[in-house]
Image (tube, rainbow, N blue to C red; front, side):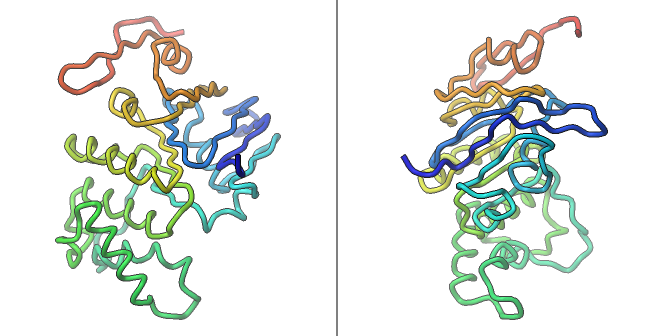
Length: 253
């Protein structure tokens, strides 16, 4: 077995001395497709930022592809939860997606023909080629999300990180997105933070339940016991045509 995609040992992180993550340890092999689930405020996005090298742990170690996160950045693609940009800025869909090639272009040099060809292929893959000349400000939230995914893939990452990628997309694209991620997972390790438990459960290979601590499950099956551990409340998984999650009435802790 080769170098793990992600290896975390005894990770702790706090904001203003208030622990957000504690005793987090897990190993994710290359080629995996991991969903990170858990309640808001449980530390999911903080964990993602630590893996990306945007934050530093107070205790413990993180290795991404055998390196410190900052040293592995050129191998990482990232789609943030919020894709808010200056919608009045005169930037086209193609230009925004092409920015993902910056890390592969020498400073001060123009994008190559290969750069443009790869971005064109990615825009076709996410269904946005016909909008390539549109100003980004004229797109819907879901359409902009597709462009940010294309931009992240333009890096040609070994690991693709996504933070709530379906937060602003329509239901049809939500389903199509996970099918796209499953296809990409043939070549790329995928890590996605999501609340779409029912939908993502059909595609992932492993699951990390995060609520300040972390429980890692390698088989990818999301069970009621796992959900109860992560959310600390009763949760039922119900399928009416499409799987989805509902929260019955319960008392908070």
